[in-house]
Image (cartoon, rainbow, N blue to C red; front, top):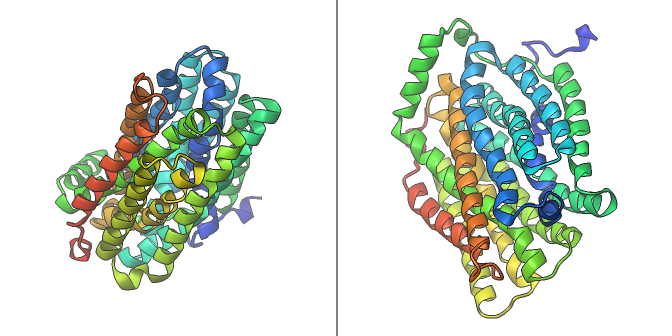
Length: 403
């Protein structure tokens, strides 16, 4: 067995990076159709049950701040494997939780584990690619990752109807165990040898240098704002679909699939043509498409076309826009200082999911407002704000800012 373990000289396959990255979107999306049922089963309210997403995203943000710099210091492989162990343990704890408090604590553990795969896969790509090539590889990585949110809501809805909401977390634990074994066998170390002797002091100095970098914050901030539109949709979509439109959890999962397919298409275009077009232009195009989809959906729904196709159809354009914008903002963030790719990936990921966490809190609060509870506005409002602000900030992204 030992002889089959990937060595440092072995280049990492894109497939193993995709697999370890899928844990985060699975943990976010798979149980989303079960949110109303979980609310009833645990005897809580919409705001509290939304915290299962918010706490997860907040813990992911904090975890990435820790995992990224640790991987610069100790290596990508050991930090990633430890994260996978935490994910399995947290998923099992979620499946056994008997109260909302226990579930929230278990979600924190699960998130700390999942964030290792999400953050370090990006750092590994940057370890082995130049900036434009990194955007292309991240596009392929995101496209592969997008299979998880395509299948996860539909599968989660079916699991809930057949076995109850806890079956979703049982599946996450089993899948995480298989990913752990595969990563142990297939993932080599890719951290630069020059970083191996870095001290804790130099690691801190490097992180502070990154935080003072204006270009980094342009890319990371745009990433956060773009992602907030998606997380507002993920957290608000089930309530709009089930309570406003009267869809079942399984049907909502099916309507969600075209949005993610649009995201996959956007990532495919980025992977094939993004290096020629340039990171800055791809971000602007992506932001414009994201806002266009949101505006069309809001316009149709407000005009009285309150049917699923009017709500979800235009948001396919938003998915395509995210597929253009997200891999390029990520590639830009981790390329402003290649020696700090791990820290950059961690901080950018923390900012990304931190913005998503704020969006889910806002969505949950708005759904508890009586005047808005029976409408789509609790979902639409954060999406509009995020898309407009992303378009403005992303206009400052330039390829000349990268190293």
